[in-house]
Amino acid sequence: MQLPREVIVGVNILDRVGDICTKLGFRGTALVVSGPVTYPLAGVGVAKSAAKAGLHVDHVIVKESTEAVVNRVIEAIKKARPAVVLAVGGRKDIDVAKLSSAKASVPFMSIPTAASHDGIASPYASIKGGQKPYSIRAQAPIAIIGDIGVIADSPYGLLAAGCGDIVAKFSAVKDWQLAHKLKNEYYGDYAAELALMSAELVTRNSKEIIARSREGVRTVVEALISCGVAMSIAGSSRPCSGAEHLFSHALDIVAGDTSLHGGRTGVGAIMCAYLHGSNWESIREFLQQIGAPSTAKELNVSPEQVVKALTMAHSLRPERYTILGETGVTEAAAEKVARATGVIG
Ligand SMILES: [Zn+2]
Image (tube, rainbow, N blue to C red; front, side, top):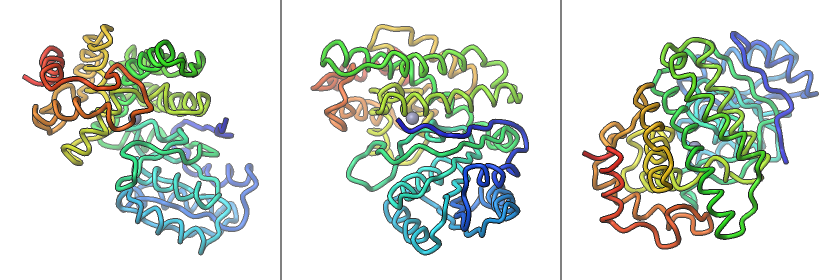
């Protein structure tokens, strides 16, 4: 079980990165991995803080999360030989930094600029163009620095997507329970409850989230961190990723990059909760309330693409048993689910 050693969530805390590096015993070089937008926004501040703590700081800018970019960052790590990789940015930046640092056996610190996904604390990374269309194991961050001010200033759609990734845990845990019953798969109560608690806390705080108050943003950030920790405890992404994630990965294949991961898993959670016979209405209501996608149209995909993704989702990861079963749903059934839940009109 790999867990972060330091988790700090607060306002204007980027300048504490240097102190955390000192506390964790990092000396020599730190390598900042960041994006073209997030580097000037937060990466520079992080680099300054690390330099103030006596570290030599290099940086590398990443624009996408592909295997080629991961390899480029591994080369940069080999050249700079950093004691720590400082991942500053959104989902792509953190995923690339996480996987490349893991492959190069260097610890990494997660410094998210947005709360759009649970990868900010999880040991899993999602990389495009690999052999697997879903997240692969990398390493958990050694520390997480969640600056509420920076995250609150990011586009609201990112925060809403983060909520979609969090309510996905309602259906993910149902799938895990099902796999436990039908396939005798290991089931961890603690990890499952932690993921569920995060989903419940977020749905109870919709007003604060819509208002983008510090409490609202903090609730989402803490929920995402708890989900990441739940995966570390479970030793797999099971508590956080079920059929709704398979649907999201299938949509990536069918429709490409037309909407955010969190938005897609939220819509997937509505349909999968329906299939489970659980309270899909409350998931949809919450997503609508906070302005997260709840329809195909809001995901910028066609009804046909939703149906196609639902029918192929089960095949992406045969070892992950879910409500979709071993043979998946038929086209007619998929269309029925999508219509009944209002995902397609
Ligand atoms: Zn996710």
